[in-house]
Length: 139
Image 1 (cartoon, rainbow, N blue to C red):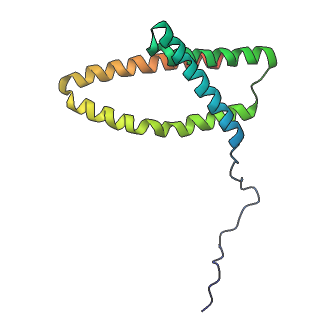
Image 2 (cartoon, helix red, strand yellow):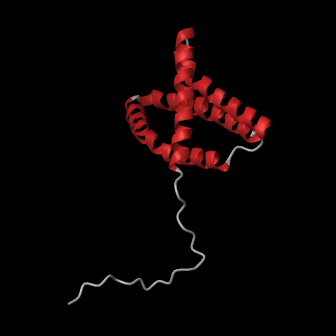
Image 3 (cartoon, one colour):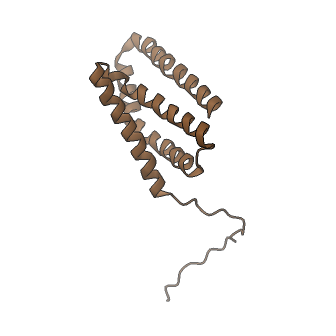
């Protein structure tokens, strides 16, 4: 009995797309930019006395830099856009433990759970929707 590799009986189509290669260098650069601006914003807002607004300031600083780049140099490079998209797609897994914790918390709140859930949805979805509209319009 010989141990030969199994041959696939399915025919490969010549038009089958190859898996996209990951641009690790650009992923690292984009991640460093995001972390630097976020940490700088949190530090700055802590110095002023409003540490909770650091993430918000960082979001608008990144948006402002993106608009300034687009106005001064034209389109944002596709490598940067692809790296940012990859970070956002993979970053969703960071929120799974938070979602599990919120589910446990809401189960323990009883009758107040629906009120708190409504406030959470409204205070999250409306600003995100407005921000997405602004980004789509200006970028």
